[in-house]
Amino acid sequence: MPATPHIEKHFLASALVRDIVIGMADGLTVPFALAAGLSGAVSSTAIIITAGLAEVAAGGLAMGLGGYLAARTDLEHYHSEFQREKLEIKLVPETERAEVRQILREHGLERDLAETVTAALTRDPDRWINFMMRFELGLEEPVPGRAVKSALTIGGAYVVGGLIPLLPYFLLPTVSRALPVSIGLTLAALLIFGGVKGQLTGAAPLRSALQTAAIGSLAAAAAFAIARLVGK
Image 1 (cartoon, rainbow, N blue to C red):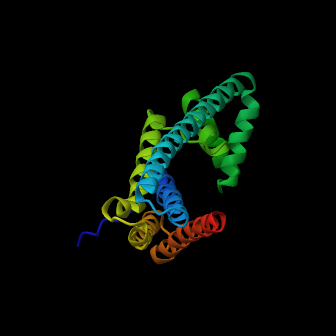
Image 2 (image 1 turned 135 degrees about the horizontal axis):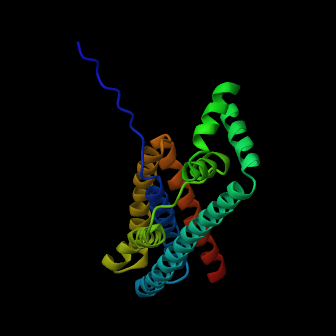
């Protein structure tokens, strides 16, 4: 009887999920807090819409630029460390071989086996450098084009998230009617987003959903209270 093949399911798009989480979390929270805060100080939906759209545009650009710079920094750091390891292997090969042996011993290999693997590994400079990058420094080579993709993903997720709390102000004529709808819509979005985030990252979906909604609610409540106090 044939054995059932063992299939390991690992989530591979961790960088993409991270970017979506960063953009969407801030996109839902910051414009929501802004709209709620303005709702406590002004009575015009037009003012809230204008301010909200300006914030979404500026925030999306800023978040996208931040994602781009962060990804570029990761790439530059990787290349810098790669060149340093390459030079060290050339200048002090015995020191680097000793480091390989130590890493292998720390991973449970016996002394003789670690020596054999070290000799085989260090015969190929490319494999040797890649081994040191991965196991000594804990660095993975960034995906080509990652910086642009990260910028677009974070910025786009921020814009999508930011438009959700503003939508009721477009559709309803007064702030007093739009605010509770915005609160309900945004809380629902935060709960769904938090649950999906938990599912994708391996956290408990319900706990992740409640934490995400709680953070967004606290930010909006603080902004609303401050606006009411300042407006008095």
